[in-house]
Length: 527
Image 1 (cartoon, rainbow, N blue to C red):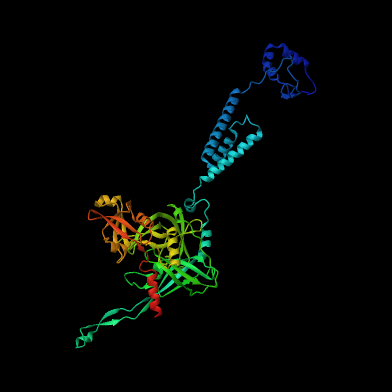
Image 2 (image 1 turned 90 degrees about the horizontal axis):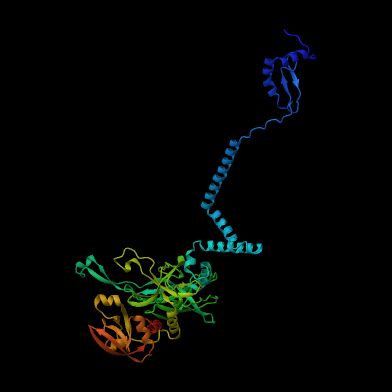
């Protein structure tokens, strides 16, 4: 509709607008909008369609543009959100660190390393202290680790179990004893004897037969002439059981461990019975061989403590389980036990000892033999008990040493003898319960012994010897051993409530089942 020339500008029209107050009022917003410097498109820049107006660089009147109002509320909100996030992250990290043992331990070591006067010391001293504290923390944490059974029961300088076994196994042997069971009269039934040929029964002589028993032994001495002494239990080579009572074995052989002695004979080496004592349950054998045998090392059984670690090596249930190793602790010391009517003071242990282990070594943590395994109390020992486990006993080596020396030198145990074969201690509890004096209750006396000749009786309670009070068999034996055979001692005894003084002349100790009987058996065999 309108025609215009972009190259022409109507100054008259402009003057008219400026003179028109209404038009000037309508242009004020547009002038205000042009206050900010910069280029923009204006509809009034030309005659028909507007045009592009270049930036002016400021307001035409020379005033400064108004500053942009800052958003303080948004900034405050952002700052608060950042602080909250950092606080939350810190709390979560602290909880994780306190719940994690390794991190807690690490932080504890770091804190202890820098907390002690770090500002007052040079840097090198602080670093050294931190390292020492860390080492101390590591040491304390290692000590807190649970200890093994061996560490709890063995001594600090103890050998390991494999080392003990390697040391003592070559000195442990098997003992095979052959006994002769003589034929006995047997009553048999004959149905034809009713027809005038007897009374229905007749006697027949059973044939003799051989029985073999096995046990364990310890090589104790090298005689430097190709011969060795071996110790074992007396009941391994001498049968005094009520069922058979076969006496001394007719043949004894020592079997070496084939793992230690590959060239040794499987049948064993014939052994000589040097001596034995049934009451002490100790026997000494002698063998000759071309093999170089390992001799056991012996320790002091008086040095043992209850709870101390011990090892047993033996041949349970025969030679099929040759050289079996079991472990345990010392359950009690100087335990009085009566076995086969013989009262003995033994080491009690929970180490497994079974038939065939008899005569084997009980070993301490240094690989030293401190006992001779002797017996085990089984379930039938106490008829009213359903089960008995872990009650095994060994002869203390310190006590056995004197017996062994006597058997080697004399063939029997020397020393003064009273002649009491069985006795029982009357302690405070028994004394109060039954109204008896504390002392030694006599349960058996050897016929023809010093006690028998002096008039001592079964049922007497010995309370003193030569006016020295004795409370048990150990104290009685200790006082007796202070004298020699032929000395006369006075025993104070209580008999049916009456106190008596009985003089007893001690005799030389040569108990039944010792050298005298062995010599008689050998003489009978030779004849």
